[in-house]
Length: 79
Image 1 (tube, rainbow, N blue to C red):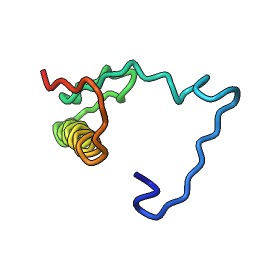
Image 2: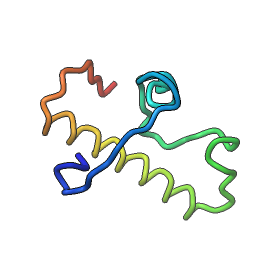
Image 3: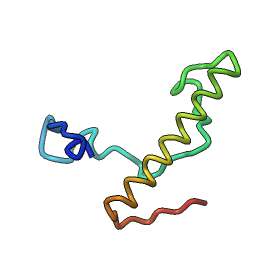
Image 4: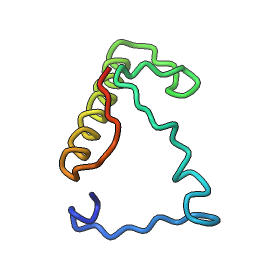
């Protein structure tokens, strides 16, 4: 996606490819944006909570677009 935008990027890994953070995803996403305070920071107001929720939904939409645009074979499930 970065290349499509004209951005040259390199992914560096401390060891062999796939050893570190580049593979540490559990393979799922949450669209509700309800993260534990230790991960998201304890929001004290509705506006902050709404912004986090909106950002989470935007991330899901972006992922859906990338799957469709690049015809990615995956087990996408909107349940």
